[in-house]
Image 1 (cartoon, helix red, strand yellow):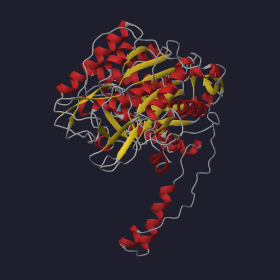
Image 2 (cartoon, rainbow, N blue to C red):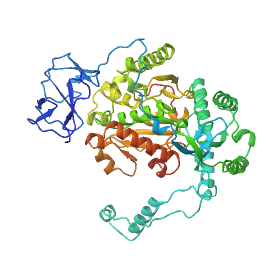
Image 3 (cartoon, one colour):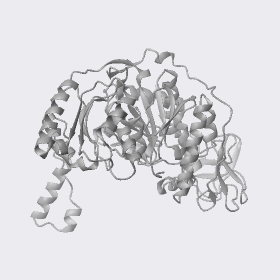
Length: 550
């Protein structure tokens, strides 16, 4: 029988509504009956007992807020009666014992990937065209215009057809109201050009607003991120455009590449506009070199690889009150399965670990990593306060509307993405992951900045949970959207890949959902099933400029 409410942890004193509950309705959990004193929308929480001003609220077994006024039992908690609060943290004892799942049936499991000479395996095979500085963005776009459709990587111009129909209505003298009420006829416009290079998934043209101005550390960090993409297992080679006078110099990029891949041997063409002279000379040379690189890249073919070669980035965006009890713990179990099978996982979004720092730091395999995590968290929090903000301001209006009223509630649920395995390493942006197991990577909570960073650190596929619907993608790594509730999945199937609303509805357990997700990941990693973000051409890329970003 489907439950109406949920108490996530035995120590909690707030109850989650799994459906809309009307004022005065009695709901039961185990042997306890609760009467709500006001309407409680699904995803929101109500108090288990009377609370006085200053009383603590606990969820997921941790402190998530304090009452700002007297709150009767059965009342909804909100931003008006509860304020963010979290426990302090310090270096503690190592707590690295965990219930390692049985992965016997995964030992022989493989995916079809692109093997690189450094031992890594890609889930895709892309060529990159990137600028070292924003001044070259236009030239990147010129190359994109020249190559994409000709090589067979263009996308159907569906909405161009819609625009043409609107033009025809206007030309025929239609009124504004007739235009607004127009019923578009999809003519199924498709591009007929076949891919010239069968083993290349695409040529990706990345632009950004960095490389000059700001501080010199910004340029170094940007070069580190770009080096992470160039050396990424999903990338076969790259064309880099430099102006020549910017802060992000070519030797800086080459230094960052050498850090990540000392024996780097992929095709890499770097052109400097101020040295080449005429734009036509730069573009023609870039076109010839890029095409030659594609000929080389096309020689790669998918081959079997153990799933231990998977590196999954864990991300959430547009979270709701169900994210922490369905989608996040489901991919947390997926994470545990992959770690147990020898794979790699990246948990980021440090502002969304606020309130669970003690648990996370205690899970670090050594004190050195725990100290680094604590130090990064404290510096990050301090910088946010210095800028007039704070982690407590992290929840977005959408988060709050759907039940995540304090950052500690949001964070405690977000941390579930990392499962229960020990933390093997703590990385600062934009460092590369080098150890199998659960890795922490310092990033902001911003969806695109964090996803961009995870892929730059080595994630060859990303699991992205959402309760409200977020279309974020990445140029070189499949980003799989996992919905926390079935209504969202049904409403936005064009961007959602996997539904875990089944957990809320009692149709499957967290473990069953986690196993199902891993099976889907393997299919996507093998090129058997495309991620919705790839189908939609969602190539989001935003470098984190190390200022305050939540």
